[in-house]
Image 1 (cartoon, rainbow over the protein chains, first blue to last red):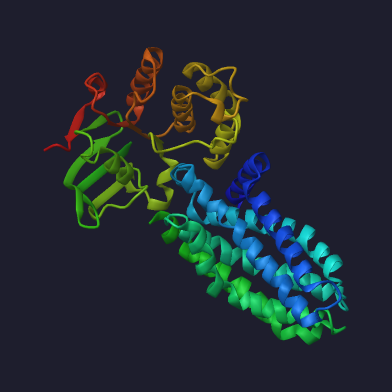
Image 2: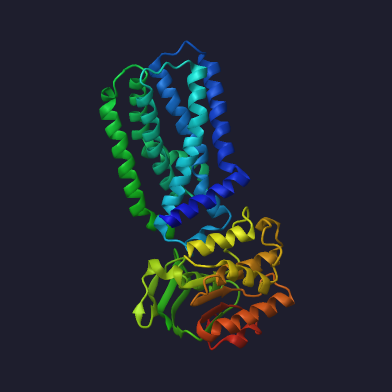
Length: 219
Length: 205
């Protein structure tokens, strides 16, 4: 775990200096949010549509930035250097921490902005925060393993979104449904099945990714 | 005592054969030179031996006092310098070295970092970003990074790459030091480098 922490710290240090992923992800989310607010217009969309729009913005924004973590290692020829100093599991966990950090940073800015611009009324704030948190775990874990897979391919950008979509679809569906309940239902128990699905997805995809990563990283 | 043993190792990329049936045995205190014309597979063989890629067939083992070292622990024993291995350009030299030292679980590495930086001629440039270094300085820094953990096996692909005369002299001192107790594996075409070799694998044959 200590090595994963060192890799996370190293990636964070690089990101603060270059801001490749942060710039891509934040600009994409702000531009999309602006485009959506102009197209739909405030006060005219109901909660079902707004919940779906929030997750679509989060999904596509994360698609623009989550792959950087492995693509950068390949493009700067540092992946072999990293292989020489670290076991594969530490690399995956370190990169997963970084993508989680990136997603949370994105959400801290994008979600309040979305709520304000789109005039989203949240009935159950704690459920809303829980759904965003669990959804982010799933998005980050799925996005990280797909990023590792596509980093060695030619058309990385297009492949990342295409491969990620079917893998992350359960997070999107459960996230949208649970968000819809957070804005309409006062009780957390109303979204228990969606929360279970989000937790199960995060656990399964993280475990499967850790088990498969050695093969992806070293082949 | 470390031993590296290759038995009939071959490597193909799809149907393209890179090398076939290479066998040798090297121990601590010895230097193996891998020679061959451009494109003969020297770099691929170094990458296979350092476990960055798998051989297509054959058996490769590293043992310490006759006990086989597991593949997932090999990285603790090796240092590798090659043109295809880059350091983190957006970090300073010091940050790179501290990262590698901590990843290799080294204790009290500060003195060794300072000593190696002085020996290689980079003292005073520790806090500069690696991207501001010249290619020769980057090559020198790769030597420092590889030597930090005093590796039992040091792989060097194209040892003289981008180095000036003074740099080559320093590198030769490193080779002499490495050969005293540890293993050195060079991929080179330069006849001067072959003075260190105790055995040779010629990929032209």
